View 1 (cartoon, helix red, strand yellow):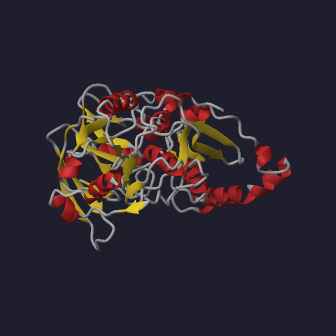
View 2: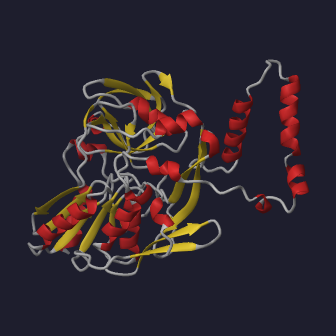
View 3: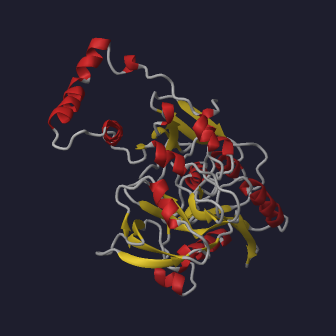
Length: 416
């Protein structure tokens, strides 16, 4: 099995946490899937990828064919230089526009181009204490989109929901602005306010919300024993310490000999692929956890790691629309192996793998979708999501009333 699959982010950069440093202008991406499962505050190894020389033989049978293919481009280039009203034209801007247009023609919102300034800004590492609004986001669409607010965060307190699109910040339109750069405008010191203009599905008009930034602490797990001797673990993220924290929680809970275990992956925006395999292995004793499928029809296979602690205890998994990326890998493996039913609502649906490849001579970088991942049964969940075995909605009215019908259903299934 090749190791390269472990180097890439299974969900673009879907698990970004909107945090800011008090001593830097960069952003902290929480525990996303980055090269070698490194701390996501350090993105330096992204810059170590060296693209191979273009193999033009794959696009044309001979140089004459390639020349003919590009004739319309060079004719257009010359017409602009000869006839466009405002001269001289900016050749670098034309080149960058051509790259953007080429990538947009693929019809994949997760494949895109950053110029040199944007790419360098997006990769400034952070040090120190992190502050922000506390939300996992997807920066790969037309607008920065909330995947899930963190529990107890400013984002949750003002009512931001999965699927909310940030279309303006402090009155400035974000249409066409790269998601990683939009993130930087959301960030800021604790106690300061940022005005977000939100587009929410089902509402006819966007609305403004003022969010007071705060210090954000990102725990990995929340665990406890419920009534009826039922164990409960909520995994909040997939980071460097998530596996060890999960194992410790499982040891403590399983020592009490529970009748069953509820594993909560709701509003978990994902994270490191390596951690996803480790987490899934705690519940799936053996067999395939996921496949990574490339454009040449080859696959890498990721199998369960032996030694999982919770491979026999009766299991229920909670998911919702904020369950994304690495969370979907884990939930999909559990579902396909029949380890336990999924309860809740359809998950986010992020099943592709992206990599940032810097261009030579500091000319920016291309983010390209390099693979799709599949569940053990070979299912793709991209833009589809995982369908729960038992559908249970959680309404705003339930939340306001302090009710959790999804958890109640899981308890009911465990006791049965």
